[in-house]
Length: 223
Ligand SMILES: [Zn+2]
Image (cartoon, rainbow, N blue to C red; front, side):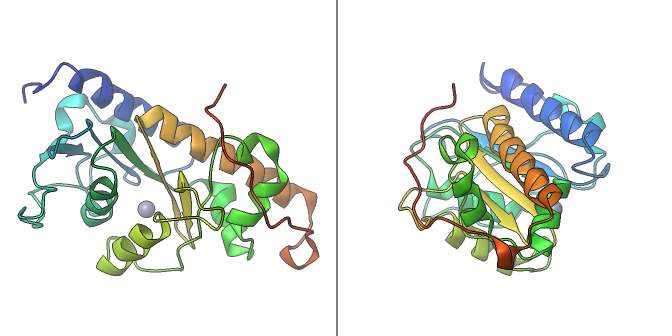
């Protein structure tokens, strides 16, 4: 497959590197996880393939997608990630901005969701995530690759309780979805949330025992 833009090589390689890093951290098993990206104001976008071994993905494996405009055919192109509808919905929310969408299964974040933690609230206690990452409302347990999951995720990214657009949301019993201008910046949101969840779980404090603030500072650009 030939590269359609000069930006393709960098973003495709970043996608491969993010998935390889996630696999090394055991945030995905070999065929889990998916990534998509798009340049600002471009209705064409790219997504990882379905069923491939993600830690061994190559830039030429990426699948090109058309159609984010109002008249576009929403049908899935052949061989794309099973979470195509979820990715498509999040790109459609951010047409004016360059966007990467990263979906992984980070261990401690999923464990915190399973234990009943409200991710959007526990993060307010930790300035290193609250300053740089807005954590939106979590999505309930829904079947992977389902239309219901795509719709719930789209809703979760519309607004946080603080009024900002979330950078990341948790998916109960499943994983997370993060959005940013490129795959590595989305990965940073996942990494910050995962680190906080690891500390919260290590503390032994239960959700019912936590003292949680209700307000969130406006986030800043990461240093
Ligand atoms: Zn998943």
